[in-house]
Length: 121
Image (cartoon, rainbow, N blue to C red; front, side, top):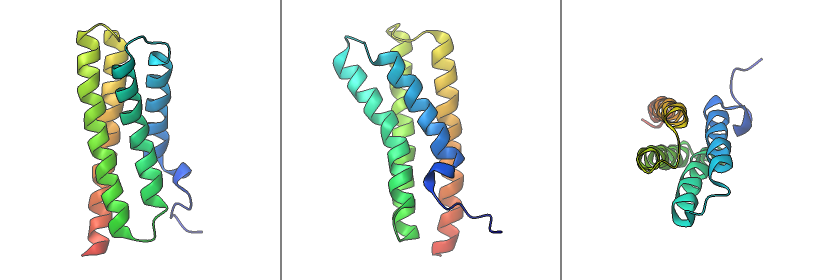
């Protein structure tokens, strides 16, 4: 039996990014801060969607490109979480949990990128 992942839903990184999105979406779904809500939800959704889209491509090089986009979205989410806690849109506990999860996702993405780049060279 092969250890390779057959679908993106099996990727731990995708599963963690889904969890991050769901938590952020649930927190902000009723927020009156429309532009902030829209941006942080889009950025968090972008992480999981770019992992999925890259996985479904037929090229390792394209997959890496989409993982870089997902990694950038992780940074955007962390940046927005920093503002959210300052503006008291999220509490310290939510900030800490989501910030740590987004850092973990970012590190996983970096590992995936390095691993895949070795296949390109």
